[in-house]
Image (cartoon, rainbow, N blue to C red; front, side, top):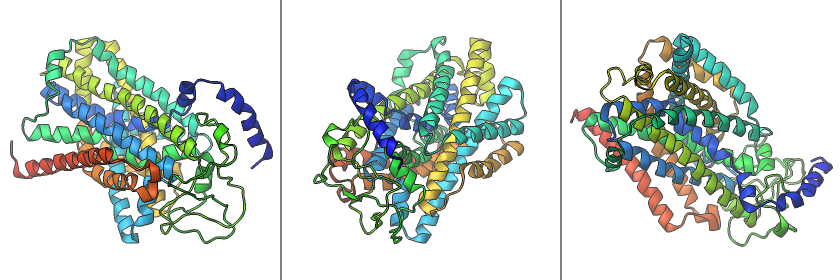
Length: 498
């Protein structure tokens, strides 16, 4: 590491320390906002508009419940990355046999493909509504723009990527919230929609679709990487050159200070004065990727070792900021989702053709005017562009952790664009394809959730940061509800019950 880097950071620490704690915590915001893009992607638009237009306020409770689940789940994922210094896919990959890893990767890849199809289709629909572009051409444009966004993302420019995605999120929020302010929402009926109930097989299908669109598997995998890479930057840069899913044997590998997860961890010299809220302040226990010496990279035979070397005070500060980051980002995303359903229930109920996004756009234009309709389409476009970039990033994290293969993001973006363009070229109804893709995501949620909850509840791995019993009970209840909903969906779909 260049000698002047640490000195410059140390010189800036007193200035950062003078800032109020809330400002220091705000400086750590970002990873949850990137993950939250998955919660306002075009799949959400299709599922929420279809639900509101067909069944009014009936399924408001699904969105409220799903958003509460999302806050819990995304924090757990971020906590895993911050405390252990490894992503969820890396943990799963280090514990599974080769054939199990490949099978697990296959289902995760199918889920990621379904996600990408939804996001590209949504962006293509928006370009068609705004500029009249053919859907296939619109899909290509979305793919090209997402490649540009992925160029911004790198280990050294993650903060820039976060700012870009947060700007898209602001556009999405304006685009989907604007219609609610000029609609005549029946708030009494909306409150009645908080009572859990169904009305036959179609509503169960929609509920599963809304759940899959809200609690998204690829966001669960991704958040552990976003938090790790942002808050342990030196370790993340080193991890890009090292396979942490197996024991290291190369004596020339960079040295990584192993820190046990229990409370006996001792902070390094000067740790007490460290500015835990400032991402640029020096961490006395940070890993120097240029250091040399015998490798001490924990593998599966060292489950108690933490690999990034951060002090307990630093970890506690990061976890406090992460809780706030997750709550703010996902409350915003939840508000956008509920607003879409309320808009459809209040302005599109009973209108012909509103079970499709183009039909909903036309109905919004007729009921609320061309300005609101255009704002809606711009929000949909921002949703498609941002979410497909985040989805490609998530797929790369999944593949690296499970298959131990690093594929350049742009190469992956090109390959994963093909299925979405094929769906568009085949003439399949885009809105129905979006809804079905979200059902597939709902089926994939338990595969991400069960390992996550087992890991965050493992005291041998997480030490003092392991989930306490009330949180574990709540988390396993969430898994049970999701599995039960998917089971009911399958039974009703096969049996044809109404």
